[in-house]
Image (cartoon, rainbow, N blue to C red; front, side, top):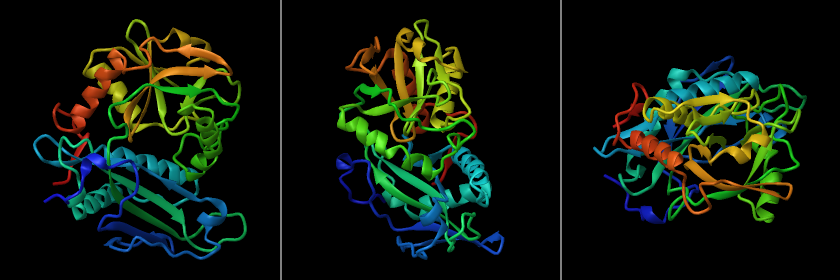
Length: 340
């Protein structure tokens, strides 16, 4: 059964579903965890998450495939990335196998909210963890809570993905040897002013350069970035301050193994950008968002694919990866976690 929801009208926002997963860490160990119908969280006013932003999160989706299976896309990769983030933030690792099991439990409990195949909608999952006990000195929490909630979401772009405009801001996203490579909440908090400022000036997003030299492309505030060369090579920036996007890594594999293209992760200088024929942002929400123009302090760089459609290679990447996710194309082993 599927809930009677107007799936076509859904945006990308929060809608309460029936169950969420909760596990608490205390006295050096995680409890067994459970599903609950209560969406509220009660915290001490001095909880570490509120005082020192000790929190991290993940994002993934559940889909109905063409043959009506319910699957999640590479949840083991989200489990590994959250474990890496937890270590960097002095948080206890939620065991990776338990993470995947929790994903399975919460999706099964909310199966009626997994949209029908072909609707363009999906069930978004948000795993997250935070320091929950009272802390006043600057130090890590000793108690933590891990949770996963779900919410049905519509297609990120209604009416199709239209190329967007980016700007090179005067703000930095991450410092060398900082936390740019992990999915910490604080990384997103510091980007909020920059994205609001970009929107106020008519841009869709910021494209950040490395903070050390401000010469190399890194990523945007909420997504990795890929480029396509004139000879159809797919390239993506390499840096130790970039969040390792699961979607980006999957797209690079698809480029090589499914489309027979050369794919490379390397340093990309801003001076190279005018030479690329396609550009796109990549992430869980939209998979690929084509870029039509980048503005660098008044200098416009027009992407040859144009401002009206995805480029040829970007479209092939999008069609292939979404085909894998939806069961239309055979997936590499381990990429789809079957839930029901």
